[in-house]
Amino acid sequence: MTERPEVLLPLKWDNDALLMLDQRLLPEETVYLRLTTPEQVWEGIRELKVRGAPAIGIAAAYGVVLGVLNFKGNLQELFQSVVQYADNLATSRPTAVNLFWALDRMKARTSALVEMNLTTEEVIDALINEAQQIHAEDEETNRLIGQHALSLFSDGMGVLTHCNAGGLATSKYGTALAPFYLALEEGINLKVFADETRPVLQGARLTAFELQQAGVDVTLICDNMAGHVMSKGWIQAVIVGTDRVAANGDVANKIGTYSVAVLAKAHQIPFYVACPLSTIDLSTPTGADIPIEQRNVDEVSHGFGKRTAPKGVNIYNPAFDITPNELVTAIITEKGIIRAPYSDSLKQLFSNKGSN
Ligand code: MRU
Image (tube, rainbow, N blue to C red; front, side):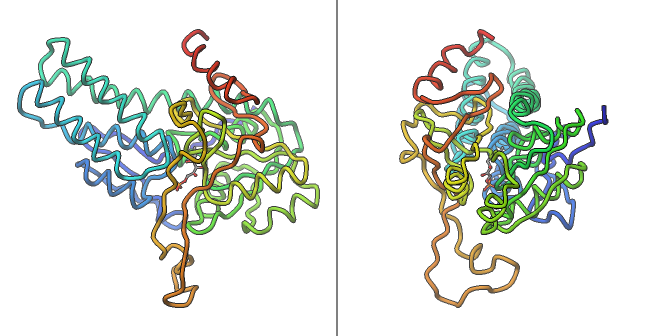
C-alpha cells in the first residue's frame, strides 16, 4: 500500500485567525493569507481566493467566528451579532448551497447555546468548536465519498473531471477527486483527464496541480477536447462535483459541466456527481430554481492575463450551469450511491439520515 501523499490545505484555523490559501495564485505561488475579520473572509470568497462549495461553507463558518471573537455584550446581542455576520457572509456568492448550510448551522448552534445560560465567552468557545467541527466532518465525509466512488471504478479506467472538486475545494481530498487519492493508496491505476475549465481555469491551475503533486496520473486537456478524447475510447467514466443538487436531482456545477454530461451521454459513458449531503437542497425543487452566479466579464475578456477579446464586445459569463437529472447516472454521497428516480431517492436519503 502506498502512503497517502500530503495535499495542500485551502483553510487552516490558527487560534484567532483563518489562514486562507490564495488559490488565485496557484499553481505558481503558495501564499496563505491571515484573515482576522468576516469582511476579509467575505472578500476571500467573492474573489475566489477560496472556492469550491464545501470550502466556501467552512470559510464562512470561521468568518462568523472572527466577527464575534472579541465580542463584549450580553447573550442576546451576541446572537444578533452572529445573525448579522452570517447574513452578510451569505451575500458573498449565490450558487453553492454549502455556504447557506454552514451559516444556518452556525446560527442554529448560537441560538441553542444562548438558551443554555452560558457566559458569552463560553458561547464563543463553543462557536469556534462548531466551525472546527464543520471543517473536520467535511474531511471524514470526503473519505466516505471517495470510498463509494472508487467502487464504481476499476484498474485501467480513464476518468474525466471538470473544474476542481478536490482537496482545494473542500477541507481535504475533495469529492470528485477523492476516489483518485484512494485509488493511489490502494494501487488501482486510473488515468485522469482534467478539463482546463475556462474562464478561470480551475481544472488547469488547481485540479492538474493537486493531482500532479499527489502523484496521480493526470492529463490536462482544453475544454473543447473532451468530445475528442471520449471518441477515442479513452474515457470510461466522468465524475464531477456540484454546488447544489435540487430536489429532483438536477445538478448545478461549474459552467461547461452540462456540455460534458451531453457528450458523456452521446458516448454512453456514465456521468457521476459526487457531493456531501450538505450540497443537496431539497428546498430547491429543480435546477431552474438554482440561482446562477454571473461573474465579471473581465474573466472572459482577459482570461489568460492579457486582453483576449475586442474592447466593448458583449460578453456573457455565467459561473455555473445546470445538468438535468436525466443525464446523471448516479450521485455519490457519504451515505452511498444514489440513483434515479432522484425525487424519491434523495428524499429517502434524508429520511434515513442519522440511521446509518
Ligand atoms: O467557482 P468555483 O471554483 O467555486 O466552482 C467550483 C465548482 O464548480 C466545484 O465543482 C463545486 O463547488 C464542487 S467542489 C467539491
